[in-house]
Length: 77
Image (cartoon, rainbow, N blue to C red):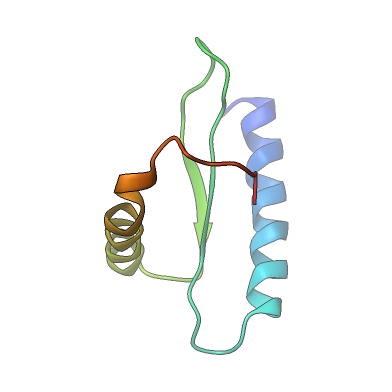
């Protein structure tokens, strides 16, 4: 793992702890990180408090809910 990957991984773990502390009990989350630049490391990294099966289910639900509006984003958050 590269130095930048280690940096991202470390900071994502910090972010995950903050998110977990801010959400009520019983809520799951996943944070994804990836590099925007072409030709760079394309590894997708994630942190979560959920099982992969639950993450996959939530992502499928999100894709279904947003598939008709792909590319229509107006804000970053």
